[in-house]
Amino acid sequence: MGVIVKKVELTWLDRTYVWPVMKGMGITFRHFIRQLFTRTSKRYTVQYPEMKRVMPAGYRGLHELKRFEDGAIKCVACFMCAEACPARCISIEAEEFSDLNITQGFEEKRPQVFKIDMLRCIYCGMCEEACPKDAIWLRNDYEVAAYDRLSMQYGKWDLMNTYAEADGKARITEDTTPTVPRRAITPPIAS
Amino acid sequence: MDTLASLLHTSPAIAWMAVKIVIVFGGIFTLAAVFTWVERRGSAMIQDRIGPNRAALFGRIRIIGLQQLLADGLKFLFKEDLAPTDANKGLFWLAPFLAFVPAMLGFAVIPFGRSFVSGGTTYHLSVLDPGNGMGMLYPLAIGGMAVYGVLVAAWSSNNKWSILGGMRASAAMVSYEIGMSLAVVALFMTTGGYDPKDIIAAQGYLPWHWNVVPHFLGFIVFFTCMFAETNRLPFDFAEGESEIVAGFNTEYGSMKFSLLALAEYGHMMTASALIATLYFGGWQVPFVQNPTVALSITSFVLKLVFFAWVFVWIRWTLPRFRYDQLMHLGWKVMLPMSMVNLVFHAWRMSQGH
Ligand code: SF4
Ligand code: SF4
Image 1 (cartoon, helix red, strand yellow):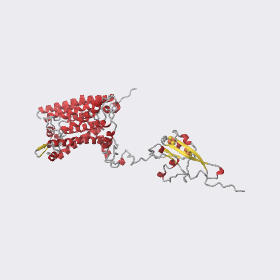
Image 2 (cartoon, chains in turn orange, blue):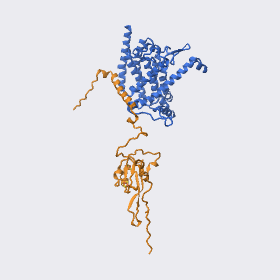
Image 3 (cartoon, chains in turn yellow, blue):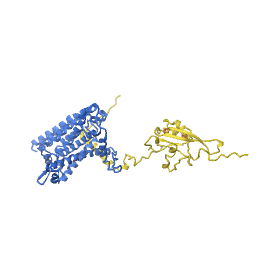
């Protein structure tokens, strides 16, 4: 089956080539004038350091480790994110803690070290998907850059404070509950 | 002028010449450099972009990105100057100058303002005396030399893409030169002389007496050929990203590349000056019979800048021609058109018009 290609019939005016060129120049000139008299804020180009794009909801940017209202980390060091990560860039070291009497044993777990290598991270969001505690979120900050490799290793406290300023939360630098129980172990009463 | 001459211990004629040379070539050089910026900003605006606007003095004073020129110039100066191992070193060094010098020289006979008499001496506002007998043949001849710049640059790089680009460009230039010359011959015929002075005087101060009206066909041919001559889109066959990389300047870098690029803009300036002089009354001011010197210079510069802008404008409107289309247009359309133009004007003159 053949396809009938419609031939464009050019009028004699089009054949002169001069007229179509003038029409084309008219179009480009219209664009030129329009762009010239558009305010910078209305132009298509975002003038980056002065103007920033508002990222859509669900954008996968820099991570945040979520916290409870009292400032305790939500993460329970279950290693699900580290397992799910296709770039293998999360490394976690867990620790146990308890505010209760040490004799009752430790019943809580949290990361002592939680490191993400942002140079290796591909911002796929798998860690967010995998987390059973909703403790790790990828949010809208896309300005992840540094002058050296070492500062691209985000530690636990970096990750907990990534959006502290944006959300108006306090910066936290230590766990609310110390690893060693605050309550002293009552010595057995001498009998 | 006389005081300046006595200060420099030279005759007024020589001092005047030196001043003219500095002003003309300095001016053209600056305009050419500024037009690299105009081209970038203009193209950006045409394509709804913004263009280079970030270069700033001391990191804060931005004058709509004009410092980009300085930044680029400095960058080019400090880049390593490489020549390919198998290149013909001498020619490789010579080529940018071969391209640049003719582009500037063509401007020498074009009067950029009205001649004036002061203290019994006539001062001409063009580097060479406008009645020197070479007339407009000189810029055309010099324009023909521009082929060497491209061809030598291409040949000496010892790179097959360069050679292809250079050959294409020189073939295009040579074939368009014929149509162009014939268009200009018709103009010389009706003027009765080929000195820029005669041509400008014959056109008068009324826009509908300018050569563009009676010689409209010739103007179209000349204008089109100027694009081929200056090697700019839609006829920039020296380059071609999709087929021959950057063409004749593939191997060039640093200041040599910058000179080649500036040569293109210098050429553009000379071509605009030629168009303004030949077809748009040179320094004549529309509707003003005896303009002052300053007004005539302003008028000429405005015309020059306008045509240079048209060069930029067309470049960002039209796509590049295919090579066979170019040859077809040159030999089968432009040449017959300028011949018709020539014969028509010869016939009109024979009828006593
Ligand atoms: S976003 Fe993807 S690559 Fe980055 S840490 Fe999470 S799982 Fe790993
Ligand atoms: S961030 Fe979520 S998935 Fe990762 S270790 Fe903590 S609780 Fe588990």
